[in-house]
Image (cartoon, rainbow, N blue to C red; front, side):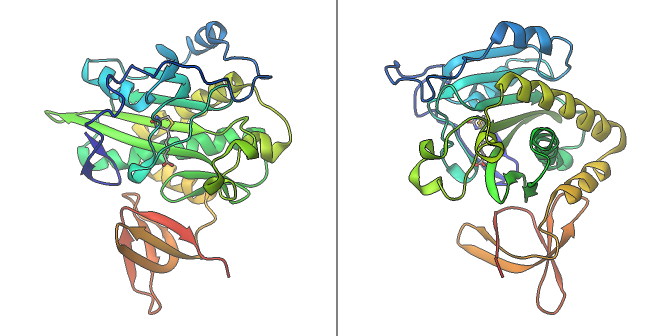
Length: 296
Ligand code: BTN
């Protein structure tokens, strides 16, 4: 199992035992005023969607990605979605934890089985970022942007994270796109270390949004983007990504492990690598890491 951009074997162990298990719950819901997810109507609405059906819903789960990876190994169909109200071991890129309280956000993973070369699999990770940005821009027309590789920000604060993982056996790819969107989380509920850098759709628009609406909207945009990708390749997605990013022309620092690269972003290449120009204009392709835009 690989995390696309990290190119490392990861997450083979489940800290909390079975991937389906979640510790016994006594914690209260973090937003008691909010309506719980209406799964029956969500299932009904997603029945017409190619991606988002069948839907496996968990009130509590360790990680939707872990469940989706397990289901994909058991042969689950393309489009299968795993959705949770709360994750007890939500995982982020670079071995980080994804804060996943109950009652306020979306945590879901989609299984894809594209017939593409393994070398092209990293391109899939941009799909989710672009589809989430399309979705969020439809609820919040100003300020949505993508930061390489696929963090979605509103007004420069992170509102969505994406963790793409892959199973490939005998040339057949099963990809899991794991997506966490902060929908109705309140600023004070973010862990203190993220309070400045993270946000939610609610914080940015000043009102709550039904999570079902956000998810259904995502499924519609996602289908459009994915079918275009399957029919026409990466180029339309690359263009959409460039339209949604504000990184081009900016000074950035990219950290990968102990290595740090700095330069001016000049674009995204046909494989999804970030193109960084150094002081002499020489271009370097960056295929993995954590990017920070340097404020001037
Ligand atoms: C990141 O920005 O570090 C990626 C965060 C990805 C979080 C989502 S929530 C749904 C899915 N399940 C997980 O355990 N992680 C992803």
